[in-house]
Image (cartoon, rainbow, N blue to C red; front, top):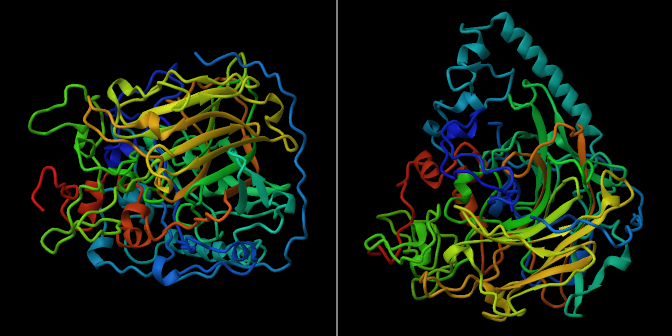
Length: 627
């Protein structure tokens, strides 16, 4: 779970060097602090909910519905003992196959969404996020800021700076053409990587059922990059992850494929190259490109550094496609909810605005469910978008962007620790789950010291997690990889009491959480929180933050997290992949609210609505408003 600071930070707080008005940084000893997550941008795919297995294994071009989904680019703007009793895993067989000899770029698509000229006029903070020469630090707050004169020279017409800049642009374009001419092209392959060994096409599930491979990326094609539009499945963020007070800038150039694996690099760099932060890291996302609902996501990873020197923050996680990691406006009112009820749990601070009750409600920073079951219908009088679908009785399903963390790891003198967690909203009193029996929560592994994590939550989420030891042999390796995973069943498949999440470490099940642990709470007057039904995208990142762990002076840079493969399995006959399935669509909503997913400076829903000249209030709720 990723620690989170104030989700209502202004756009200036987003780029502050010292975060002077933000909440105090969580104590460094609170290793598993709050979380925010999200995922990437780019092209939307909408596979059929009941896609045939044969179609998944085809290597023909993916059927991207560009007219419907669009393509768009974004301008810059007390753990347990850690003793390891199992032997290290053997190196993984790469089963390499010849790399395609054709190269090129995924074709670009003209902009599909038109805005009035006024939407593109200069705003106060535009130049703070303008790409170009190094940003000077000015003012008492030491903001990252670039004056107009700094870029243009303050004059009109063609000055020497303009001549040199234009020449540089020409050289840059020629260089880009040369580079892209040699860029590997994987756009013609299907969702199953042809390099995946046939022995991995099926797998025995936790309940002994048969699982089918529905997505894989073996990362065997060297030289892949993940800038906007370059890859059919992945894209890198280009922003500062202010939500967790990260020290690095997430830069698209910090990930590539080499030697048969994906390499995400964290390194020190100049202020000029790192937007004044001094570090560059990487966040890779499948947001709006590949999503899945239910099943198992499995990652083979070599962790950065060593298990005894603290500071790096490697993570792989999944999050609902309605939210995009790093884009606060897209997450406001949808993260970390998993809720489908019309009651107090949908309201800000999960309390009655007239009575202030119930008294058992945990004080929260929750802003309320933006698109819940209690949402009013859209009307011409008040533009209230809802992702849908609308039911015949005038209600909607509760929609959200929940988070499940495959792993996050820390290091200490006694060894490495993996946290595997889920984030929830609304909260139980004192963040306590229902744990009357092993039916609700169960811990399995004796090999990796799995224990309940005493961290229960914070202002912005209730957290349920367990800690286990990491495999020391899989750090900073190109041959040894740990296998982490999440295997989950959405509640809606069988109804309340059937939803479950299992976490995997070293290819062994570590612990299980059933939706019964998050059942209705009478004292807080909230309903059950289901294991999510939302289409989930995949995120992998390597960063640095004192809100997560102590950063040792002995850290070595650059540090690399290597991923040998990412694979997704689903139960045979229950294939559900795609970012906009019929029962939980996202495509139209994203297309109609594009600024929330393309402008990281819009940190709240209100800022987003104001930017498109709409009412800044949340959609009306039937509990507190007349529809």
